[in-house]
Structures are given as C-alpha cells and as structure tokens.
Length: 377
Image 1 (spheres, rainbow, N blue to C red):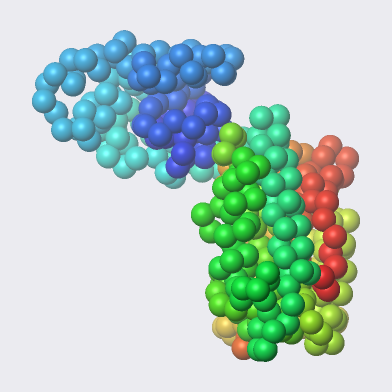
Image 2 (spheres, helix red, strand yellow):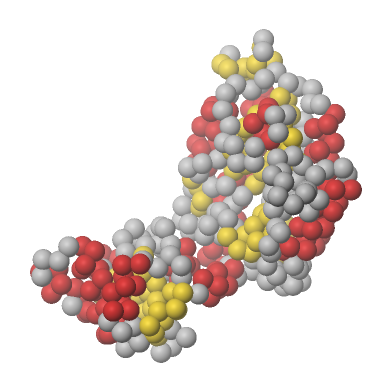
C-alpha cells in the first residue's frame, strides 16, 4: 500500500506523526516501494534529515521545481504541477490519502493518472500508538497542565470574599485573570493554549463555555486546560472543579458521583476494552445515582442536564482524536492516550466535571494525571 501526504506539520497531524518537526510550508511525504520519501524545500531538508532516521529526504529541485518557478505559474498551479512531477518521479501510480489531503492537488494528480483512495482509518490507526517522541511531549504537556491547575487552585485559595465577589491581592478575581495566569504558567513550561476553560456559576453547566466575569464569594469554578507541547505538537487534557466559600450539598454529591464514575472508567481501561462499553458502564452508574444520561433520555430529546456528553476521547497530535469513548466507540489498543471526563450538569444552575489523562499499556493502563480531586480549595 502506497501512502501520500501533502501539507504542513502545523495543521496536518497525519504528517506531523511521520515528520515530527514544526514545518509551516507545504511539502510532500510518500511511502512507495518500501521507501519513506520526503520531498521538501532546501530550507527544511537538512533539519528533517538530521532528526528523522529512515527517511529519504529529497530537495524539490530534484523534481523540476526551478523550471516550474520560472514558468510564471501562480502558486497553487505550481504546487499542483509539482505534485504531479513528484508522483511521476517516484513512480507513484496509486496511493492512500487522508481526508485532509488538499483537493486541488488531488485533482491534478488524478488528472495525470494517479489513483487516490481516501481512507482516514489508515492514518488514525497508525497515530493511535504513540511514538516515544509523542509520548514524551504528552507527558511534558501534562506536567505543564498540572502546574497551571495548581496555580489556579492556589489563587482561589488565597482569594478573599469581598462584597458580592472575591478579591485577590486587592483586585477583583475574574475568570479572565485566572486564564491569563494559566497561559503564563504554561508558556514558562514550554506549552501553549489558545483556548481554555475557566468558567464559574451557571456557566459551568455549558460543557465548552470558556467562562467570563468575576468569581462570586460562594462559587463553583470549572477549569479545563488542554495545551499543546511546543516541541512535539502533542496535547494534554485535564479538568478539575473547585468550590470557594460554601458549595451547595448538590454540587458536593455531583462531585462525589463524578469521582466514582472516573474510578470505574479508569479501572476498565486496557487493550481490547470497548470505548462505547466503558461509556455505557459509566452512564449506567450515573443513572443509578438519579442522573439523566444519553442512554436514558427519550428519543429526539436534547439533553442539557445530567451526563450529556461522551465519557472521553483520544489525545495526541490533536486535543480530540481517536479512540472515541461515547455512544460510538473504538476498541482500545496499547499506546492509546485517552482523556476520561465524566460530568454532571443542570442548565441555568451549574456543573461538575473531572478529567484525567490515561495511557493504555500492554497489560492495563497508566494514569498520567497526578493531581488531587478535592472540590473545596
């Protein structure tokens, strides 16, 4: 089976998996006749050759790039024609490509007689078993995440009630302030997050609400941090829910139920486990505790309360990737890294979510998250 990829490694995880460098410009990767070939500009060729063993790194000039550049073609047509020349130069008559393969380049290749077949599973399956480089990046991102989470907990702990809200060092404590501090902590540890969740009060009932505004004297704060490790391009993912002041008994019970659900899910993670089956077990547990779930709701009902989302998802070169652990799930394999995130919510009131990162090992799992679950700071 021949493989062809065209893109850059900042936006195409399939390509980053094969060439683990941050490369912003489009280049080509092919597996043909047992060889792994990278056709790339001279600006990047030496970097790739120095980092990755087993790659046949070829400059674009070898495929007539200079002639095409001098011909006056616009850039898109130039890339289309360059792809055709690379395919012919490699003797590539057919190849499997991912769903993200550029449509324009695909059309030019097909017009030249190259047969392309889109099969995303081929690329998802090879990415699920994390390389040593990727797993090291995930561990770094997780360590940065835990440091940032600890900072949020400590800032909440130091804050004091003042009137209707809380203050930190004499200034109003807001979601925006906490997010700024999180980003600074992540950057100091080699990670970055363009988006993250620090929500409070009724906002916490909305799963991906990023959060805004001042924290109340008695409040619930949901923190979901999913940064990328700048060296490897790999992500981590972690959620904790904190309470300041005096949390309602209902929130305390939801938190206890989520902790029980997370422990159940973690105990089921091993090679061969069915992601949909683990989601079902957690749903059944939470239904027994009196919470609505995707499995108990009526047909066609839009669920906004209870456990209304999937149990988890894979984490790697994307924050959300296979394997899926929800109503649709995948069988887990050794090398998968999954985020397990049971949550309970009520629209207009609030919510609780807890999330750990777990590596599937040959005989079970390793929990990569090492952070307390305490609700009250």
